[in-house]
Image 1 (cartoon, rainbow, N blue to C red):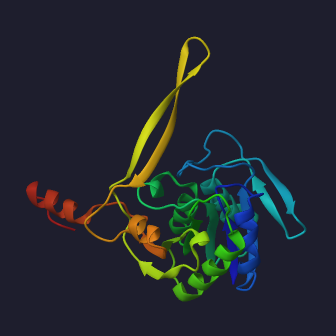
Image 2: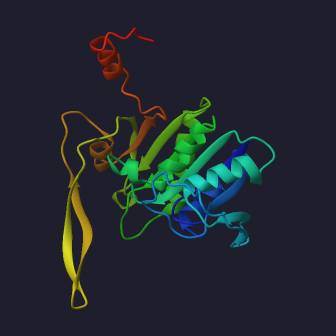
Image 3: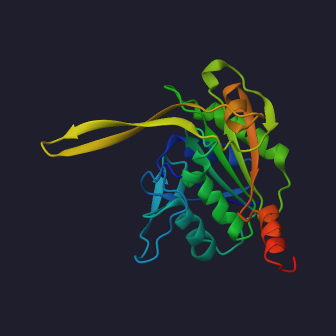
Length: 251
């Protein structure tokens, strides 16, 4: 199996090294990741500038490609240019912090997995809930176990996997749950920056409760969460209703 590994925390991130060690049990792993942190980059891509790319050696563990761009850039460049053989799987992570709820839209980790789907490659985004001491090695073992349970994936599949805080003990069994859309309790903290400018630091707290079990609530209960995502953002039910309203023959 040929696996592409990327992330949004950067090629030097400990989460990437941890999951690399585990993925080597599944096949050949090629690492193409941003040279610097791209957290919150979402699905940005570089259009108007050339992409810098440098070979990087990590702890004697692997030699990968560091890209001066976004996680989506990394996947596109790896698939189209840096690797001759097709990839069987793209793994993004392990991210430092959960990617659940509306944060899925902001996540460079999830965007990398989604870019793989655009290119017809099955993908998995892996994230670990944030806490003071991050045990990426344990998280990687749980991540590998979930990957084995998910196999085989179909071309274009996107699976978002989140691992709960490991300081609370062994995670509860994985649950397949939908993405929460209620958001989080967020606010800005104003700060003075010099004499004339006010700057604002985004901060937040707990997720807003929803009527059903979602990725946010289930992760907080200590379960590993599994959420299938889709590249097609079309609301097909609404599209059919609008076609009927406009007298358009439904496709």
